[in-house]
Length: 306
Image (cartoon, rainbow, N blue to C red; front, side, top):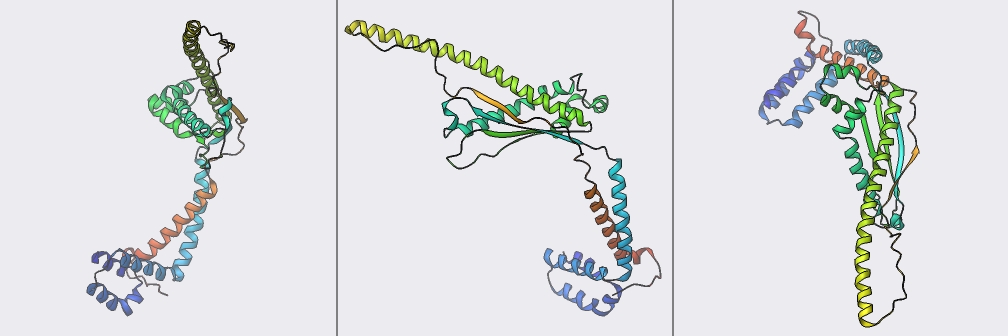
């Protein structure tokens, strides 16, 4: 750590080191500098270097040049457009406003998200001849890598669960897909949401049908036992049981689309302002480094001090 502190001392301007360098070096040798001390020394060196007129001119030129370069690079980057759809899920039965409705719906969305972003589901979208996604990538990369790329471009957001006990369904979710072709971005979101609804309907049909059969069989067995007991004790039941329509409360989950996939007008990437800011910051940093290390590359050049 003391070696880093000595190096930080050498970063101060030559004029300042001639006047105060020996005292600062002695202080470093007599103490046990830590990371905080080294950071303070580096910060002081940066500040003193920045006071010089030469640094100000160089920083201005490089910062402006960096901003212009960043702007130019942003036009060379392939843009990406993001299409988003917003929907909600709710229970259609009497449990819709129950205490356990919202956690159940969030669990359903998490399961659906896992299924719809599986490799099989993504591969089906990528290889869809109508969409023809990632054509260039598929020519040079295996399908598994292309699936990973799509998984990064496809985002499913689920509204966080409200911790209040009075919070009720529905639960809002959104699907966003970013792609260089804005029409394909919209088409993928439409296809994803449509597939999600189809999968849910299929599950509802098969699940409820199986539940109906099991419930009917159970009720029939109970009814037979009740009839047998009534006959044994000579009782006549006046209650009728409707076996044709069993009540499966809260079994159906409904998906509703609030905002269909939009056709984006402006790309979300690249952010040209961010590119310019990065270029400007890079130019400033280069100016600072050039001022600090200039004495190593120029022999006999006068040192500019504050």
